[in-house]
Amino acid sequence: MTATSGEPAGTSANDEQVVLIVDDDAMLRNGLGNLFRSVGMQVALFSSAAELLESRLPDAPCCLVLDVRLRGPSGLDLQTRLAQMGIHIPIIFMTGYGDIAMSVAAMKAGAEDFMVKPFRDQDLLDAVSAALEKDRQRRQAMNRIDDIRASYATLSPRESEVMGMAASGLLNKQIASEIGISEVTVKIHRGQAMRKMKARTFADLVLMAQQLGICKADR
Image 1 (cartoon, rainbow, N blue to C red):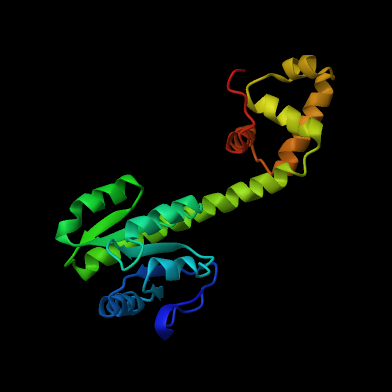
Image 2 (cartoon, rainbow, N blue to C red):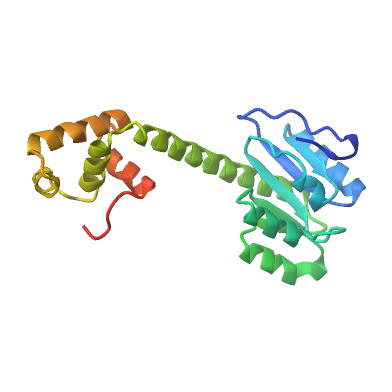
């Protein structure tokens, strides 16, 4: 991750949280950086949307504190571009009083909050803390899905078939009849699926199947 004009971003580990600040006003940008550092937060400072897009984003919970009006692409342009790239960092916009309409558009496009200048430092800190916690939870959920997919990849084709059918509500005897195997074999495949998926209960297995999208709604 790079920061602008020699402004240190700090190194980020997976368990750290990083506030990304994009503002073309160097005084305000540095002031915000100092504010977040004063409460122990890691920061990365950028003078433009392009500079952030050219940087390697940290592999850590993040939020983006973004001025609506920037030289070059605007904050709204950056929000759109990040969405197109599949980057879903929570965004807190900073706006002037004349930018309320733009702020409404930003919120409709998924921004977490917008702060009207001048704003209280504590209000911004509270908004950023909430956004960082939301991103932390999002990353945990994504990691959980990745773990589930990795476990699912270890299932045999028959085990994955039985798992999907069982999670869709079919009884063992119904599964056995539909795919032409014995009910005992169905139980074995189902048990193997639970073991490989690390499901403690059948309800856990159903939830995993739903997250994987392998439940059949019409069953």
